[in-house]
View (cartoon, rainbow, N blue to C red):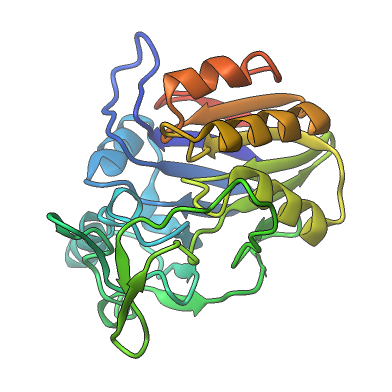
Amino acid sequence: MQLTVLVDNNTLIDRYFLGEPAVSYFIEDAGTRILFDVGYSDAFLINAQKMAIDLRTLDFVVLSHGHLDHTWGLDPLIRLYIESKLERLESKRPTLVAHPATFQTKLLTGVGQIGSLVTETRAANYFTLHLSREPVWLTDRLVYLGEIPRRNEFEAQTPIGRVKSEKNEEEADYSLDDSALAYQSSQGLVIIAACAHAGICNTLEYAREVCDEDRVADVIGGFHLLNPTERQLKGTLAYFASRQPVAVHACHCTDLHSKLALAQAVKLEEVGVGLQLNYE
């Protein structure tokens, strides 16, 4: 499997790409082409073009959850597909994999809508929707985890705004739609997270269960460690120290203080737009 970072908060030195506080990864495995999250704007499209990555021929678009920094790029992606048809360029109709709650309205006091601006109905015009709470295997070794159980007592304790339920009632939003990918490499699991609202430790534990694998080769993505409580940070450090992944690529919603702390427990690597990782 090859993973390319199309969007992150940071860019690598002397790599002239666009960064934004968002996430988008391009993944290729066994001939299958996957876009995991679409960032906040069209930055992922611009960066992909600079890297000669053609997003017109994707097999899957996977959304980690419904927040703006992971879904608002859907609109420029849809425009790319429409323009491709107008210009008679080769393009595919990808399958969009996400949790059933991904397109629910998410609201933040004083801000308003922080969820997807593309509705489920509109998305269905351009993608084949596969909305699932259960794991979905994208390739023989790469799986979308679906709804992640929250089993520990130090993660996923604080809601972010409110969400409109299926009954159109507002309730505290604990981001139950948050998910991740897991890849079965020869060295163990590679966890590809986005924001890890479910908790990065909960995510890793569920991936171990779904894939029946104890070894951890890498964890890349946002750890949702932004001004974390002392309890959350200590719990996360203890968990990672016990699991001892071969490498960790914490990025996006992981603050400097948390990265410095993680570096004392694991082998922490740099992440930025343009980074390419290969796993066998």
